[in-house]
Image (tube, rainbow, N blue to C red; front, side, top):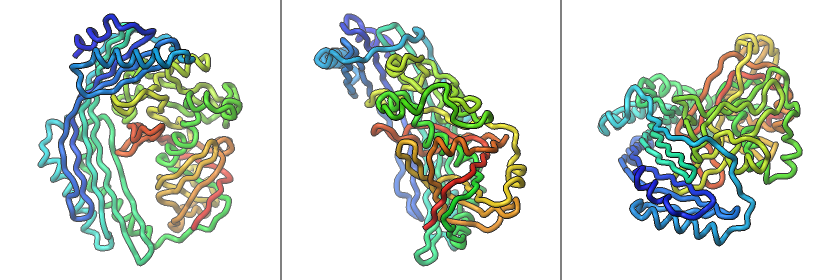
Length: 453
């Protein structure tokens, strides 16, 4: 494959050319209720070429790798016709490397029967609870190899093994429908989906207990967010605002997101780190061949960096951060997060709870939305905090606010850092779901607007 790529680059006349070819295989298993909805094994290969001529990009995606030279010429011709743009690339090191996966148990060494039996066992555990109406168990694994080369003489081969599973329970009492789930998914191998029997019991109990939870009354509350919700906030509410293409294209955001501006207390630091081996968002190099790195977006309360591709780094007079990511060979790289989290500090969860006489403890997320600096998230679970202790279970807890004000209102940061991957992922620019992790410690936020149903 390397020889084919090198030959295709010879003689191509462009300011810059890069080639990505991906090949791999995957397995999928999906139970819904008692029914096995799908079970499959698949493999495929494809690639793409990007060419830059006089500031204009050309792009061609394909499946017939044997005609690679023709697609290089096609991308170059497109770029020539679209020339006159303002695109240019920040310099990065020329790299020759082969990155191999590190897993204890490769999913490819496990039979399809064993994978199916594992999913069936988890599904049966969930359905064994009489108050659970239905279930969903979804398993995915994949092995992919990406070959990357550019006209600057870089040649990088990266192999990735992903494996994950989601288990969900749904309980119903009349019109009251509640659900709970757990999802794991990262690059550590098949071992991360084993031994989840207790998680299956847990999601069943959660869904059932939520049926009797009290709807919350809307108001302004002090909130303790668990590490999962902390991660969702770091990623969705703030991380996307730190992506260089989003900032560059939005004049109002450029004015707000000024390097050196204070965004929180001295204790607050938010990080994106693509170098965390084993996490869902790990890659040694991004889709442009740039080495990934640990990037402080906020450090000690001060806005410190943004996330960049080679192109956005030039436009904003900054350095590439290794955050140009494409979801597949058929997509162009755009600025994306990797593993995003709030750094832990000194508070124990018990101390934060004890120091909060009245408030709401929010666990996980059922989803949400963001619009510039405004966010809305629904907590998966919640409990009233009374006299520094957890009290009754609540439901329909929807958190709303301005991300910049919320950052300033974080006044306690825990010491219990956790990161979460899973089968979900990040969506942007029609590319979804991209594998990422997010997380952090427990955090306390003052003056959160919460609306219930």
